[in-house]
Length: 99
Image 1 (tube, rainbow, N blue to C red):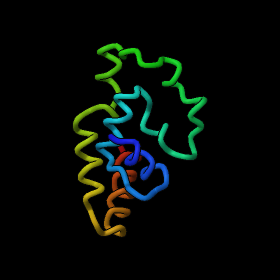
Image 2 (image 1 turned 120 degrees about the horizontal axis):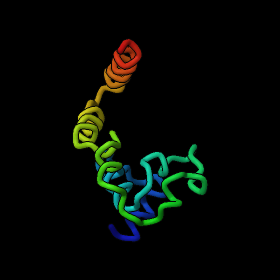
Image 3 (image 1 turned 180 degrees about the vertical axis):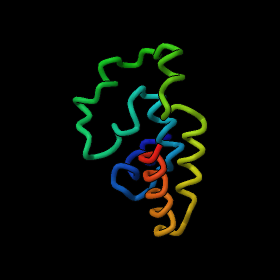
């Protein structure tokens, strides 16, 4: 990734896909939520660990790092119809609450 690309992402000129965001969070060892404005990055819990490798069991137990999650998020954002995507989101929440 070049400086120009990062600058475009920071200004909002380019979008970054969910899978790329996930990859970046893994490389930087921060949660995906770190990249969103409403999260205070200074207080993010993953930062205190720095660039250390997580234990294998911690890596496997984190649902955000599973291939299934990445594929699901990627498929979700490939749905062009925003209303349909929102209905799918609401359905997933309802199913989770009912379980």
